[in-house]
Image 1 (cartoon, one colour):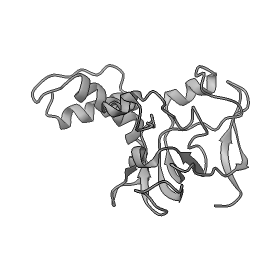
Image 2: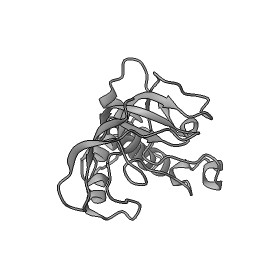
Image 3: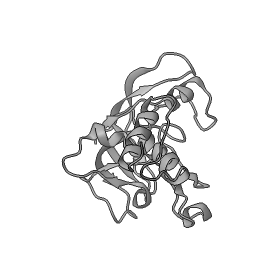
Image 4: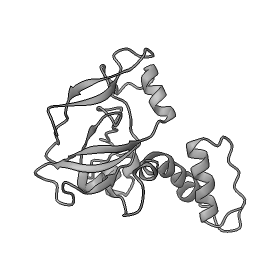
Length: 195
């Protein structure tokens, strides 16, 4: 990593963003810095840009759907090292609160969200906290663009269709609104054997 990176930055809500040079992130002791290879654009990013999210402080770098390669790891990270290909869920968990202990990391009481609680993936590098809890290995042969869609679109649809809806083979599933999450829900329902 150099001392500066290129990133998409906005300084005022709802006004044009621009690509500029900003300081490289540093990994926390429990975190990593990932070199971004692919990032998605989500409706949530638009809401953040509009000022609808109280976690965002200006200036800001958006982006939360990402995949890339670990560039640097903090001293307390045990499962990941430079060169590992990874993606991450939209909600990054702390791993120790009661919600995390119950297996509900998606509603972690101390969650962080790249592109919201801190600078995100519309940049060359992004810092991610609690790497041992949050990072997911990207298998060989999977493109970074495909992997970048998993942490938000597919994770959201999976929770809705499988965990909450408990879809079973042969059941009918109707999806109203087939954007990124809706199309993911269709694929997940079909994979579960639904009609």
